[in-house]
Image (tube, rainbow, N blue to C red; front, side, top):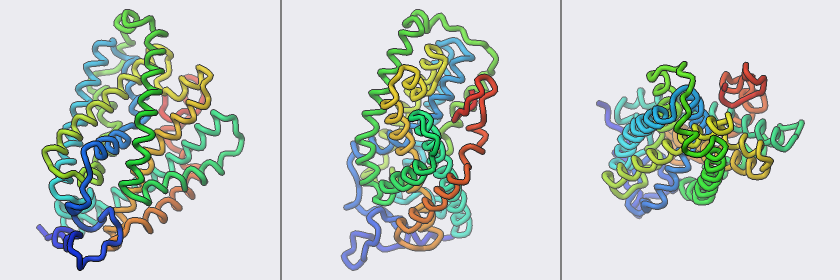
Length: 358
């Protein structure tokens, strides 16, 4: 196997080495750059807090009994936790980004192809997400013109990615507790709307979906995004510790999102809690939930294409590639990429434009 220049690069702790980017996109994270358990856990939680997971949970809950749905949610969350934590362990032991790990496994040429795939898809996702942000927030606020939201949202979401781990950590400390509190509040309301626990346990579902399809949908919601976990676990001080933290965090967050989405679908017929908040008349809270959720997802995307660009160009600085990718993403959003996405096509049942087809 070809040797990676990332492995052979000088340690950033060496005083003779000038560190351009404190996120070390082309080298191992040195001991001095490692983070604490709480910092890593909150960043991973923000990374995993992904609204479409709730929608998928609601879709599955509508088809199965409540007990069967909970079992499927547990299995799916365990699979995701095991897969993502294993990748996270590799990142923690090597101190390398996901794209540099790909170079180790695939060689220099194969690693570059991985960088194109891992970075290029994230640029597209960035454009789709800020387009969705503008559509959802604009709709909630009753705005007829949404392009300013695309530009402002696209630039704002790039700030935390540009500043690196520290910026994303600060955002996660603000957003994760807020999103958790809002979800628990709406979940309690949805449980009451469904008739309490007796009503939930009495839910039988339509039975139109197979177990295999349900597991594919639920695991598929985050299996691709989870591949980028090495970008964060490389900052860990130890591999075994990081495996446990990643597994526990992903398991908790993914199961929680499936569960919340299922409650929303059973109680309100709507798995997206931001839509439930709008139904309840809490427009401000709905907008806050939309913005914080999409921001914690999209700054991770911007960070991913930043480090991928650094690897492709051989430049020890992700920031120019964050800026370049964000510009491309904003242009894509302004051209309407989000509204042309199959996942935002008009719903055949209610004729409304939805993030995930209901």
